[in-house]
Image (cartoon, rainbow, N blue to C red; front, side):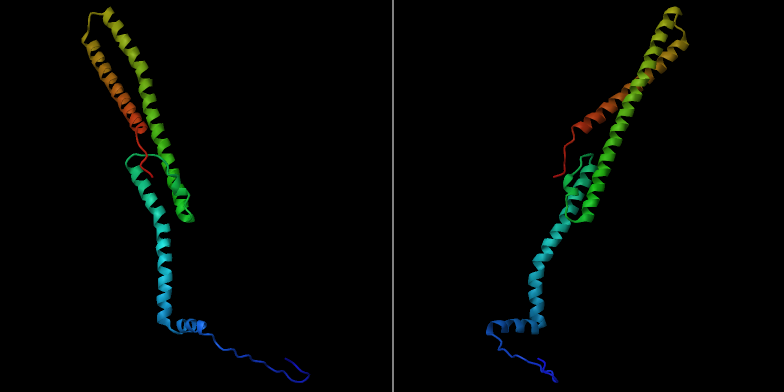
Length: 177
């Protein structure tokens, strides 16, 4: 309060209720305060550690699935509330898609190469058959025919491997939960 020449301070004193006395006891005792904070903090820490380790476990499961040949993405990896782990999940899924595309391109290339080699090989076999009719079986023709047979077998093996890899990719199961 102020008067013309003087400033007066007013102080009010109020009795502390018995209910509030225990709060003062807790605040005055560091040991009790630490114990209470520990009991309040432990459930929070357990919950937080679960939230952090769950996406890391999902990433581990997905990585093991990719290592075993399963090239399926896991959308759970991108839906995490921790931004950094979600970004790692997006990158991981992008890598899986790239690997899948690369594998498909490789299989397509092997199949295309095999089919492209079959046409000239069939022409060579036809030319050998025509040459054999015109001549009376020279040793060189036999040797050419043997080499064409080996080349034909290599192309058949390449086609078989390509089909087996394609069937393997089709019959894989998704190991990610």
